[in-house]
Amino acid sequence: MKINVLFASFEALPFYKTGGLADVVGALPQFLDHRYFTTKIVLPFLRPIREKVGQNVRKRAHLYVRNGILNEEADVYSLKEGKTEVFFIADQLYLDRDSAYGYGDDAARFAFFCAAVREMMVEMDYYPDILHTHDYHTAPLAALCQYSPLERLRRIKHIFTIHNLSFQGSYDKTVLFELLDLPAEDYANGKLRYNDSCNFLKLGVICADAVTTVSDSYAKEICTPQQGEGMDMILRWRQEDLYGIRNGIDTSFFDPSSSELPCPYDRKTYKKAKPFNKLSLQKELGLKKDASALLCAAVTRLSGQKGIDLILGGAERMLKKGAQLAVLGSGESRYEYALRLLEREYPGQVSFTCAYDEALAHRIYAGADLYLMPSLYEPCGLSQMIAMRYGTLPFVRETGGLKDTVEPFNEYTLSGTGFSFGPYDQRDFDRVFDYAWDQYTWHPENWEKLIENAMAYEVSFREPARQYAALYRKVLKS
Ligand code: ADP
Image 1 (cartoon, rainbow, N blue to C red):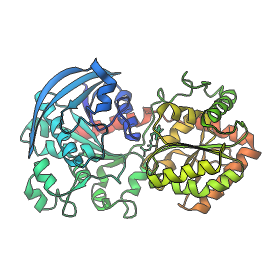
Image 2: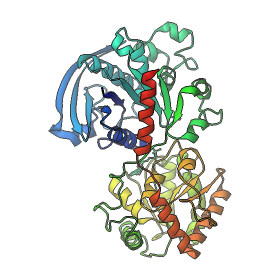
Image 3: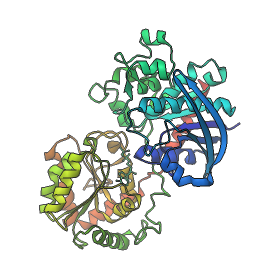
Image 4: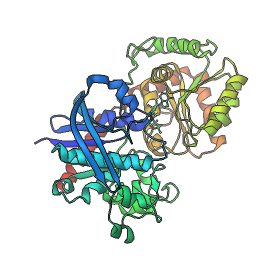
């Protein structure tokens, strides 16, 4: 008998993406071994998804979603994506929006989606063995199933994955009773309470059969008061059921040999192709065409988490040495503003594209030399792995998944896949940047060795999928 796994998330590739969460939920169901697993995904039918899939979906069910004060009808549509069936929950009031997050009624929207997924399982008589939820938006599903009077819902096992502990969904306590319809006595006794409020992430942590996060180091870090974001005590309490499974990337989506690049390449042909992609990228971004300039890049959300302050702090030094900087991303306006100023101050040397652009991201990964990711914290990070796949050396801070996936260069053994530094400190950033610069400028043979090591590093989902499969089996036996 195959094991049925349902993934519930607010984003997944190829339908809708704001960050790494979408890469993971899109790829993991495809990478599980379908001789033993049947995988399905459920997503909200957001407007961009509706526009993308058009008429390709099939209507599967009509739902009456009633939970607490929620009282709304919804439809379930589906389509087949690779080896996975994808369900979409569509309604007028909560999910028919331009983006997944950032609305005043987010608590109601997330609660509605969770209640609708539960209703979908009942209405379609589809009860997965495992319900795998991702981040706080879908975290209440474990509680909604466990507190249900229906035994078939209560029998479902739950895995809850934390992709980023900083986002928790902390709301007024009334959300717990009015929107989730969870019992007041378990609020009073503390089980469902978090600092006199309702916290969606806590619901996932305490109600799931196992909690995972996206790297080993981050699993340890979030159990400490320094990096536990106020949740460390609860996570320590669940430490026996807390697993770190690093993310992978979809290697067919992020593929340097794909024809979308000006000059596709692989490990055998990168030497000729990368300079060509670099010159083409410099032209596209208005940078000075110079194959020898060290082209540093970042494709990122512009948030404090991503170490943008260190990049900005080190920029002048990098640029004065003759390096170039290309940044693609959007986010906090202070960073957008600072990058615009830098671009104006260093024409031909700095390029800032304030957008979300997947195709350009691929050309940047292919054309750059050094990928800057000096994050303050990083649950796993996909960008450094994507960069390695494209032979662009990651320059990272040793935290979370960055520490687990980037091996710093050792010039004696010629091992390593990139450059890294420890403390979140400008001097350490600058020192290691100088070292990377020296390797690039004076030791091109070392740089080549690093590129070869990086491109050979296993970044696919094969190993993580194997670990998730083992965990699903373990949880089903418990
Ligand atoms: P996070 O999920 O914290 O944002 P990750 O490194 O785990 O960071 O994943 C980020 C993903 O989003 C990568 O695939 C990266 O290439 C992509 N990405 C981020 N910003 C942009 C952008 N502006 N345009 C295109 N892709 C982007």
